[in-house]
Length: 97
Image (cartoon, rainbow, N blue to C red; front, side, top):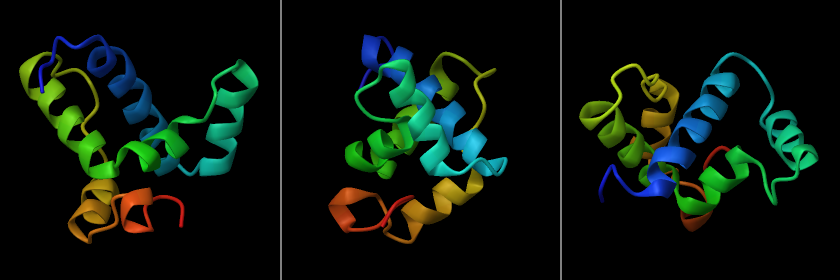
C-alpha cells in the first residue's frame, strides 16, 4: 500500500469526511443519498462497507501518518467496529447490516 496511489489520495479523505459526518449525527443513508444525487454510483458509507472498513481504516491511518497530519483521524467508533470484527459486507456487518 502506497500513499502515492491516486485512489488512496483522493478517495480516503472523502471516506474519512463521510465517517466524520456520521460521527456528528448525520444519518448514513442521508450521506449516501447526497453523493448519489451528485452523480456518484454509490455513497461513501456504502462504498466503505463494500471495500471493507478494516481496509479503509488502515489506509486512512497510513495516509495521515505519512503524508497529511492535518487530515482528521479516523473516528474511534470506526476503530471499535473493526476491532469487533465488523468490517462491512465481507463480515456481514459494518455501518450497514
